[in-house]
Image (cartoon, rainbow, N blue to C red; front, side):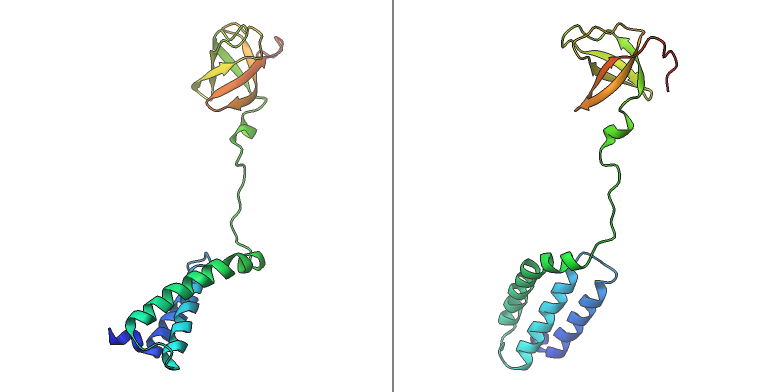
Length: 157
């Protein structure tokens, strides 16, 4: 365990970890590398004399750096991830569906065929007979909320 008291070893590991942040983004690996540099300095100046205290200093300093500085640094360094269309319902609203099991009256559930799949469907209090066309208003969990479509709209989108 004497290698844990070699400041050059800690410095090299720290530099490699900080450089690996370019390949493994996320802001964690850099702070682990910075903690290695802190331990290297402490070992070099004789503040740390045992391998156990070197490991303890590494764990404490890496945890402190991650907790204290990660949020601060992430404000200035933007990530390159984008989130698009997290609302799946955007693609479903206003689509026409075929009613395959009568929906309603009141809150009686029925069934519709949408994108080749049978969905549980709820009406808005009105009765929508099987064989007719309905329009998707929204989705509640695994049920589609539909309303009767205009009878003139015979074609499905």
